[in-house]
Length: 173
View 1: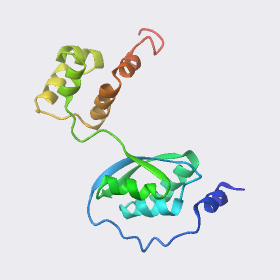
View 2 (view 1 turned 180 degrees about the horizontal axis):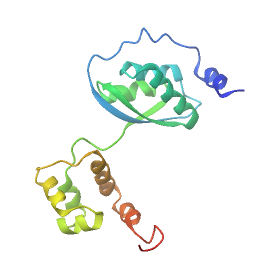
View 3 (view 1 turned 120 degrees about the vertical axis):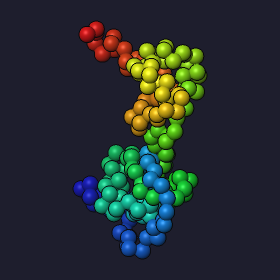
View 4 (view 1 turned 180 degrees about the vertical axis):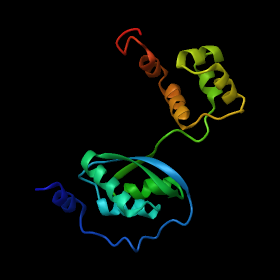
């Protein structure tokens, strides 16, 4: 049996997308989606994604990745309420979790929770002290990559230290 026919067999008949009631407003939102094939309802999941203004071709790609790998990351153009997305996708056998760093992050709270001075925090995690000071004093904000890094530092500083260790990478350079 081909993958295409097995996906059709598991997900049921095609649905008419033109009739999707799309949300009128909302902010973009990124979600990690997970499923198992036994409970997965592909057309219903695609409708829930299309409702948030995701183009149909993109929704099809997400559903296919979910079927093939059991997980996918999606950025929805218009999320009216994260709880509504989670609820709609749960009905399709998909567990949705908001994904990515928050828009705002309090660097000082992270640093103080680790019991480090600005100089120590910057040294341990490979940051410029002046950049850290600017973040803490509100003169600038960490970009998306820096926010993702800081979330990882807050959640698992030992993993970050291990990743930055030259020993782990195979010696000094």
